[in-house]
Image (spheres, rainbow, N blue to C red):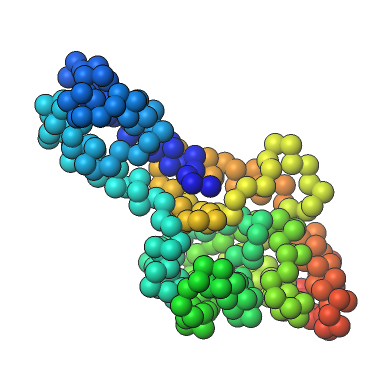
Length: 295
């Protein structure tokens, strides 16, 4: 997907500000385009959020309005929109370890974490073997330099936040995540056993949405992390999306509440995990590990 609703909303917001600037100075879109040397349709696309306004475009727009002082703040807004969407090839240019390290400051200052996943077990709950399989797959798929082991060490070290005082984790998984095999069966047995262990930590509230849940009002969505109430990170196929606009963050928060309402917690959640462990164990001949009691 080349963009997201969040970016479209941000572009529309910037477009509205540019339209207001144009109208404030009594210019039609046709006249502004003529002064900038553009086709009139470019003004329309920018004002309606269908096209990104570059810093150069914004400076030209403000100059055409005779109000160059208005450009500075609008350029900062445009650069903020650009920063929302970072392609993986850019973020991972310096390697997977660097990409892992880049989010550490955010994790350090966050007190309440909320995560939803329909694809993979979230990083803080992963075993070393599962993380290695995930990152190896990313490296091979994206043709990156091999620093997987260093990246694994960084991600494992990040898991210390699970037991840091004052931090809380609310995590909701689709039941299908439990059966999405990442690596050999024994890796999955170990990973799901780790999930059972983590579920009883005081800092973790784990929910599992069963496959047969009624999804009429809340279908599965993209995997995302919420950091307090100020930021959402979403992993897309081609890029890493950062959402900070209050309205957009609120929408993710509302959907997380809906997803949580669908989830089993406590004993019923552990029963779903234990059933998945048993399935993998039977398939591979691996002995099932003892996990928390579900009664």
